[in-house]
Image 1: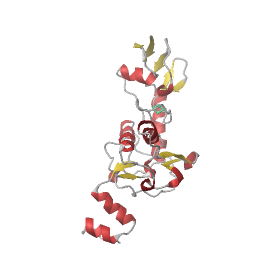
Image 2: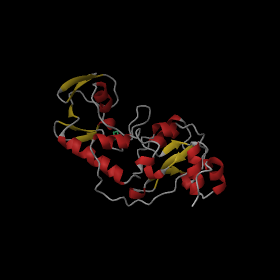
Image 3: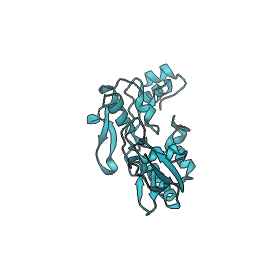
Image 4: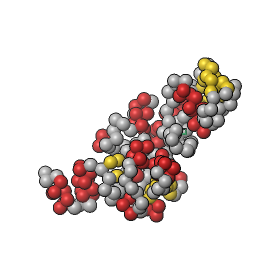
Length: 234
Ligand code: FES
């Protein structure tokens, strides 16, 4: 047990495993993308970064609380860095928000609105990757991935399957089934947990309309005609 001072207010902690949990327990809102209490801590997005009384910055999700700590969660510096993180994530992210099924529920989109990020100053040099329509239940669009690793951890840690993992490095880093397989070629059991933990629209549940998109992508006129007779394939 001990106390930490958050934004000038003393907060008691007992067995909380990280500073982020104490911040939230105190009712203070702090953005996160890669933290989930049911999964191991990854510390990738850095949105939960806080500042201590010596000006040191650290990710609150990955820091154990110490008695006497003094931290700030919403300084000018932190707001500036968080906004930059969101802008950089958006820069490497497919921004077809208007047609994305996750629009309105996307954590990244909501953060961008909240932080007034309406313009991205950086160019996206990432290659457009094919969308995986192979699974009967889940669609995977790697172009919307922000590398938070939530799907990787839920699939291996909670579900014990481990279909998804990281591949490549730097700007080529991607989350994918091993050996670039399609979801239908893996041990995926279509539990949908990856979809639940994904903060953006990478993993979504397949609907009838998605059959049409998949068939359009394959130029499969027969399937399109069956499901949506009014749609004409160019
Ligand atoms: Fe802490 Fe992502 S939530 S680094």
